[in-house]
Length: 67
Image 1 (cartoon, one colour):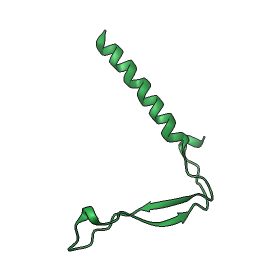
Image 2 (spheres, one colour):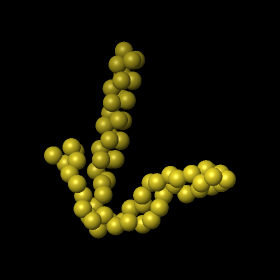
Image 3 (tube, one colour):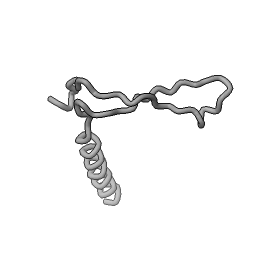
Image 4 (cartoon, helix red, strand yellow):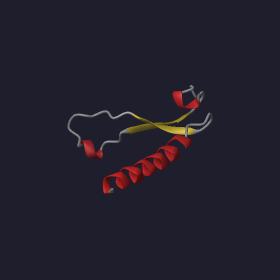
C-alpha cells in the first residue's frame, strides 16, 4: 500500500515538474546564454565561466514536443 502511494505521488510530482519545464520555452527574439564550458590551463574550473554571449534567438526549430 505504501509503495503504491509513493509511486502515485512521485508520478504526480514528475508530471507537474515536466509541465512547468516544457511550457517555458525559447521564443523568437528572446535572449539566451550559450552553455560552452571551456577549460583554460592554469585556472580553477570553479572560477571559469561556463556560459558565453548574450545571443538573440532568430528561429526556433520544431521539436517532438511541438507536434
